[in-house]
Every structure is written in C-alpha cells, then in structure tokens.
Length: 241
Image (cartoon, rainbow, N blue to C red):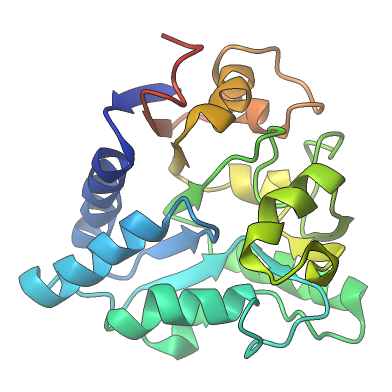
C-alpha cells in the first residue's frame, strides 16, 4: 500500500483530485467507484471546480457507488443517491443514466444484492474511492465481514450508527440496515484510493496499514491489493509515522 501523508483536509482533497483526475483523463469512459460521507466532500467540490474551470469531462464516465441505506427512497434527503446528486453529479457533466447505486426501496433485498453484484461483474472499477470508519469498516463492511463477501445487506453496528447520526436530526432516525458492496467487489477494482482525516481515524488507519490482515479489521484486506493508495492528513497518520 502506498501511503501519502499531507498536512490537512484541504491538502488531502487536492491530492485526491490529482489521482482521480489522472484516471479520467487517461480513460474518458472510466468506471469510477464512489463513496459518500463527509470525507470525500472536499474531493467532490474540487472535481466540480475542475470540471467547470478546466473542462475535465465526465460525459462518458460510468459510476458505481459503494452503498445505500435500506428503506430510504432515492429522493430522501439522507439517501446516498440524493447525496451523490447534490454533492457531485449536478455539478459535473456526468450522464445520470450512467450512475449506479443500490435501490434502497427494493422489496426483494436479496434479489437487489444479486443484481448489483452482477452489475459490478460487468463494470470493473478503474478506481474505487473509499473512506474508513473508526472501527476499520470500509463501505458498510463491518468487523467480521467475510473477505469473500459480495453485495449484501448489513445490520449497522452502534459505532457506525453513531458516526452517521450527525447527518440526521436524531440518532433514532438513522437506518439500522444498509446495502453495501462486499469486500470481494471492492478488491476487484483496478486501483483503490482511500482517504482518511482526523485523529479519530488514527487507530483505524494503523490497523489498515500496519495491523494483521484480519476480518476483524475489514480495511486490513487492502494490504493485499496490488494498487492501493492511502492519502491521509497528519492527524490520521499519527500512529503510522
């Protein structure tokens, strides 16, 4: 795993744009694996600015997102489909028909997981963007998730519910289940870019980079990927430098 330590969140977001843009410039019809949460917001703002000011085009790009809350409609203001539209897609020239995410309202959740895994089989990510949870989860793959997992429904842990509650009016509103790409789906990406910032991620970053490869720290599987880059600020890197 390549580790790039930068000063702060803004520097992390700038470096992330550099890496993401290189993929799109080299391959205009690239498949971009995207993530939600607060960590990639700086990157997405940079992508919008770069698209408008420098003309970097996403017209031919296809996207696949990691996860979606189970039970939330795509127009719910806390759904990840809504998050992606308002924080990235509406600001760049991507064709919304080429963007993909699990259907949070699917009546047959097992069938929806199978559909999404088949989609990923046909759309290998040229780059997959990841954040990391404070307990070492990536996407919604919580500690104990099998390394050979594909798209599945997960019961969110209390720590993940707490992490995400800042985005809801009250913690009781946070969905208790989510669809997520499995670790096998993530590891199939040609390139992986992980972003981490803040002292609260330091333990998870240590486990990901220097810990034992174990299902109790899902992000540790990334040590086995042939082209994985971590970009983190000094606070998140405090236990690995």
